[in-house]
Length: 462
Image (cartoon, rainbow, N blue to C red):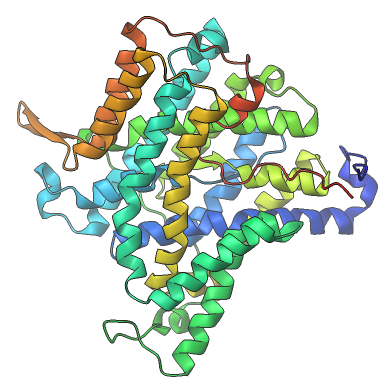
């Protein structure tokens, strides 16, 4: 078996030039997935959604904030969370109460307001963990609850992926094939960035089709380069201020159950990869606090929720460089890139069919990861309580397609399917006897707790 290279905890020993290159490598590994979230949200908001520039800016700022709050010890990069895609789509589709007459662009700040509250739930959980301990808290959020919720998040998005792919199936299939090929057969760094490669390669193919005179299935042009031509090379990100409405909050806040568990899984994975127990030092309460405040800050000014990334763990395992300063360099690069509108608009001009092809596998993978969550944590479905909890979460999450709308006083409130599913799951888990989940008893299962797409790369036998 090939011996592992010696881990590097102090990247300055490599010299400043190599350290700068490692930071750039780390940023590009996170880049594809980070910018894909605003691209997908823009599709649901008909071009009036999240800004790529704002997303990159707060990925960088959020990562630096996370590092400060975690005592500069944890080598984690915070990128855009895919888990909230379903929530964005639900807010875009709201047509009751104050949302009845709103444009898509007017709904966006309310979606961000819901994420602000979701981020604050991290902070509340952090204080509770600090006060009573992680094992007691996790009993209320076992995989039998979080796994089916993640499954619902993915499946609720599937129709959107099909609609986008139908615009140009050849392009969609190219994007899909590239992601699959590099995810399965890619080596080294190429295996870490399948989404970025899928975007870039299918974009190049789309340019070739465009030059050859091909059009989408409805006869429209594959590209519209007018915004790219008009964009400047240097410019400020276009921030917006979040707004708050109870219906939007009830859409977004329950999704934090899945993303908080994703955070727990990623911190566990980073701990296992680097040989440091970050759950104990600086403590899970500190890392949750950093992630939550980074999410709240980003959403307050028009960015998506931040989250720790499985891709981050993959790059750490690949490079064997565990110095958090390299990650902070990657964050600084992301901030710098956020002030280059031309680059953002080039990616923003991506054909809808490519978005469909990428999301075709992405949304399915979210659901599959929910299944993995259940399997890796060895949820026993011979127990009636577990079957009942999972069954009712799935029925509520997929059955209440229009949610439940009711009026309190003069305010119209909508509980979406995911909110109903989360409430039902948590209550049933709390009241039904037989809850035997204990965090830390199955470390490999604890690592797979959320929407993370890349596990650490295993060393190949030679």
